[in-house]
Image 1 (cartoon, rainbow, N blue to C red):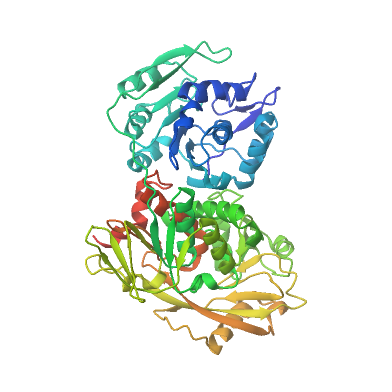
Image 2: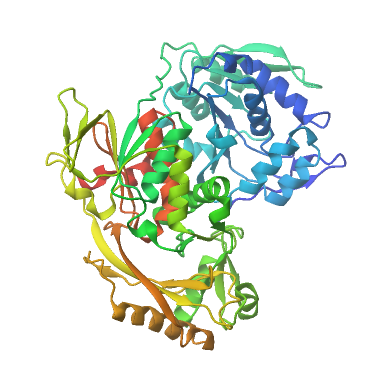
Length: 605
């Protein structure tokens, strides 16, 4: 069940939480209050002017609310910080506002209009967990965590130790929201702090002062903003050191969507990449069309949770970096039988936000599709399709990767403890950090001491058909036991077959027939019949026994991204952020248990 903000707007137009009986920002001036309390008393933007090249400044915030603190911080960071530095803003919100509520609140905040519109265009469906978004060509990263901090903090702080530079303690007043202002908050601040970590908060309540002092922070009372008499700020007094920044070049083996996203995420951090592959997008990433949408179950599961978080990052990535190749058509899953209809109704109940998925009756399904479907359907309004090969090439261009057109014969530890990548041409390339993004072929390169991964190859053949007068009006992707994509230059892509354990790339006439029969059997509509085949293509997906991708550390300095299955274009952007964050020692966009479910180590116990 989703937790939504219960909000009304007072006579001044300021949003008020009816649950906590408190305002989201000052009636006098929300902008001035935010700048005074959180920016000024954390020493910002002065501290940003000393950032080193490619250094990342990390802020953690309790209570995202309208996002005003984030927008102002983003705005002033771009204006004040060196052009090669980055901002990582991590915020927690239990009751997220809707897009409509945010739009109404932003009407009072013209000072941030230019970036608030950008933010709204990427605002995720507020499902539980972390939604990682980047802005300003990768210089601004937002981790928006949806959920109760008392549940999230124990899982989040494990991989955020000593990495937060400043805390914004916002949220509603302790008297109105006592559940948040508890000892776990102050303990988390201590765990994530280093010797230069500061904090600021609008409140001066005794429980907050005592909690901060016990957690190792100084507590200084200063005049509050407006009618508030006092507020507090301070700095951590522990002896921990700031984490070091790594910007050494990284070698990536493979040139599909997972490799491209790793390269892009590294480039955002000022890390160059060398990509080794005979060609770009020569595997499943080379299909002519591909759908992007989350995998949702009829109950919240770890797998569906991963995919709705990955979906937010995927949308943000494609909208920002390859908008010309992204088609926001929406995705329909027609209920072609009674069993699917019952399951779809459960999925579209109260499990997910309506901006993620909702249920359409047959009439609305027909209207949304643009052709006759004749059944109810699930509709994913933010989903869509893209042109995989052009997207992969464009992302590599944004990443400014150096390409080595060769095949890798083996990898091994070099004498200095780093990695040697031995090419078929006889050349060897040495690197401290190596990423294997080679799909189902990953085990061919893994050293014996690392051991094989349980990767299962699954051959799939897609079929391209010529559009027709009855099929041309199709406006959305249709997903049944296969999929059909709206026409591109008069051609539709449909597929795909699913042959476990097969790696043969030769195309088969019988697979085309299977794809066509799957469509006609499920659709039961005239537009699905007598379609003319114009092309076909076979590729191999990499899958895992538990259906979770493999993303993480294989050995010291050796990382793997594989097992993305048929949803690689949904999961790869988040996978790239995880790998780049691990290499650069940054806070990651998943809880520790979610990261463990992706780690190669889960198969080694």
